[in-house]
Amino acid sequence: MRYSPVLTRLDFPVAELSALRLDGEAFAIDEAVIAVDEPELSVNRAAALAGLFTPRMVAELDTALWVYGCLSRPPVVHTGAVRRDVRGRLLSTMRVSVRETVVPDEEIVLLAGIRITSKPRTAVDVALLDEVPPAREEAVRELLAAPVVAAEAVTIALQLGHTRGKLRAVSRLREWSAQSADHPALTRYTS
Image 1 (cartoon, rainbow, N blue to C red):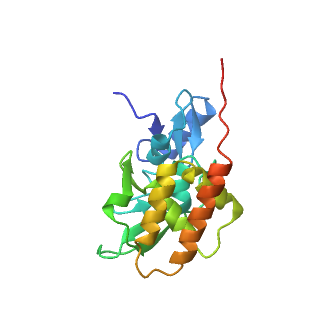
Image 2: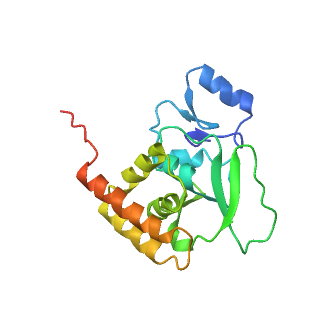
Image 3: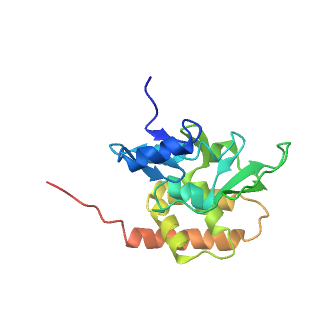
């Protein structure tokens, strides 16, 4: 039987996961472990959330930024969203903060069985926040470096209807995407 390259507490007890790390067979990726010969891709980062997110939840904000590789470390407390019309109790834990919101299905992607806000929607959600720390702003600029993502993010923000902070969000998205275009990410070439 072949296991996934990412193992969580759903696969093995914490002691076994720790032993894999101590033996040098795997390294930590949030609360999960990943085989040392596997790259830390978005799909693997999403798989690491399997023990934290239920199928009804959508990973968003800093959690989505981390999954997309824009943040080097996972957030201490992940952020999840559930639809307002979903019945049941919201269960925030020490590792996951849950809020009710409306995220259309077309703005959600599925990676390793985990629902995550799309790159444009993630940028919009961050732009809607009252305060955006510099590290988070830089992470969103990385997302907006792709012109398609930047254009779609502005379109999503403009279609939000009567949402608090909408105009500020559109302004931020335009500013951040313009700065991303002025300073494209460096590419390392090897021969």
